Image (tube, rainbow, N blue to C red; front, side, top):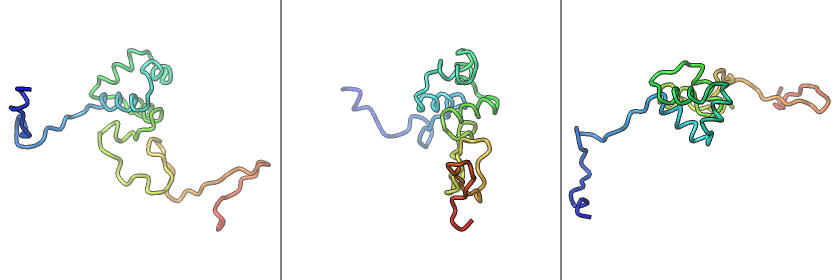
Length: 126
């Protein structure tokens, strides 16, 4: 308890708060762990060796295809995995899924299949 008296709210170095920088590998690992996917399972899902998962998650750069695979499997936006930036605009109510590499256009209308195989529009105005 003696050390508590010496603690302070002042930053140790510099004039502002210390915010850690995360690498793309850190974000890949965080996405996998948040999705509760063991590294071995992720390796199987991506059809790579377990050592490749370790290498990706320690990297400062990864191929976009790897980031897309992580995004699809963890349902985390690929933009965040690659840049650390939150995707701009959200899904805007368009129904697009941000982890997809080819999100739905905003004018897309949902359709459902009729029990007899006929394509039927759900939009009553259509």
